Image 1 (tube, rainbow, N blue to C red):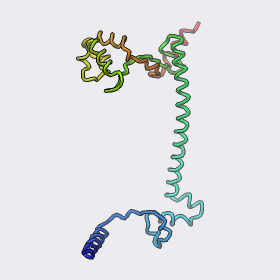
Image 2: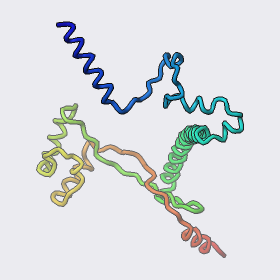
Image 3: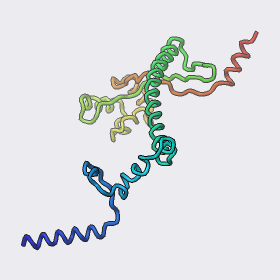
Image 4: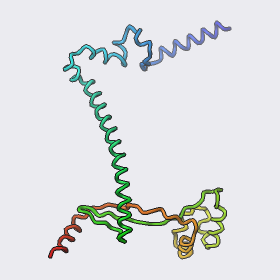
Length: 204
C-alpha cells in the first residue's frame, strides 16, 4: 500500500513538472553551487556585466536603470525627511498665525501674495455607544426635544436639519458635550489684486 501511494505521489509530481510553464527563480545559499547561472533569470544579468570595464559597466542599459531608480528612491527619502521638518515648522507658524488672529480680532491675515483665513469653531463630541456618559447624553437629547431627529444616533445631525433647528441650536449652546476643537487654518489663496489695492489705498 505504501509503495502504491509513493508511486501515485511520484506520478503526480512528474505531471506537475511537465505541465508547469513558469519557473520562477528561488535564490538561496545553494545558488553558489549551481553550474548553470547563465540560464537563471536572477543571475544571468550579473554574469553579463560583471567583467565589463567601468565605463561600459556604468553605460550598460540595465545598470543605468537600476542606478537611476536607486538615486530617485534616495531623493524621495530625503524629500520625505525634509517634508517632516517643514511640517513641524509649518505647525509652529500655524499656531503663531492663530494667536495673531486672536490677538487682533481678525479672520483674514494679508501677506504679500496670499491671504490666510483663520477659522475658529466648536463642534459636538459625543461618547461612543455603551461608553461612559452615553445614557446621560440620550436623556439630554430627549429633554432638548430633538430625539426624533437623531434617534438613529447619527448625532452630528443634532446641529443640522430643518425641523427643530432652534432646539438643536440651544442644545448645542448649552450641551456639556460641546467641545472647542480649536482654531484652524482653513484656506490660503492668492491675493495679488488685493495687495495692489492696499498699496493704492496707502498712496498719499
